[in-house]
Image 1 (cartoon, rainbow, N blue to C red):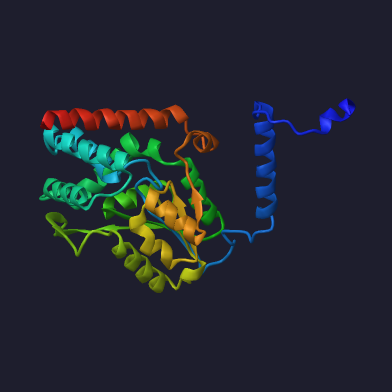
Image 2: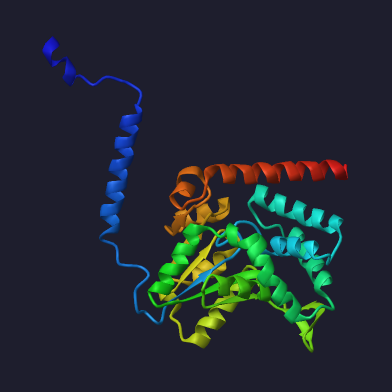
Length: 300
C-alpha cells in the first residue's frame, strides 16, 4: 500500500508555481468564454455611440482641480484658495465619492474666479493646462476603450460636470467626437459668474445623453456608457452596454448585482497591464493622505 501513497491527497500550501498554474487556467477559461461573446463594439453600427464620464474614469483626479492649479499658476487667485481646492481633491480621493457640499464649494469658487474673463482666454489657457497637468493623468486602459469605439466607426463623447470648455479641450486632444459639460453663462464672450441651468451631474447627465441621442438619431440600447461613480447610475442605466470603470463601492455593488462589466485600472496587477506603475498609485494615495492630514491640522 505504501507504493500507492502518492494517490493519497495531502494538505499543503499553494506554491508560487501552483498559483501561477491556477491563474493561467482561469485566464484560459475566461478567454474561451469571451471568444463566444458577440464582438463589441460592433463595427459599422452608426446607431451606436459611447459616453464616458471624465473624473477618475478617463482621467485620474478631478479636471476642475487640475484646471484650478493652472489658473493659480497664472495668478488668477491666491494660494489659500488652492489649498482649499487641494483639500477637496484629497477628500474626494480618500473617500472615493463625490460630496455635494464640496462640489458646490468648488463650483462657486471656480465661477467667481472666471467671472469677468473672456471665454476665448479660458479656452486658450485650457489647452496649456491640459499639457501641464492632465495629459499624463489619462488612464491608458480607458483611452483604449474609447479608441475601440472610434475604430469601430462610432462616435464618442465625454459627459462631465466639469466646465464644457475644459471638457472640449480634453475631448479634442483625445481625438473624441465631442463633450457634454456644465455651461457657464457668458455675455458678449465674457463670463458672468453664473451657470446656465445646473451642473451636469447625476440625473442631469442622463438627460443630456438622452437629448443628444435623440438629436443624433442614436439607439441607446446599442450604446455604451462608462463611469466610476454611483452618481452616474442614471446615465449608465440608459444604455444597453454599461461599464463600471474604477468604480466606487456603491457602483461596484450595483454593477455586480446587475451583471454590468467592470474594469479597474488602479490596482497593482491591473495597473501594470495598462502601463501604470503600481508605485505611482500608492504614492498618489499617500500624498493625498498627507495633504489631507496637514490641512486638517492647520484648521484645528
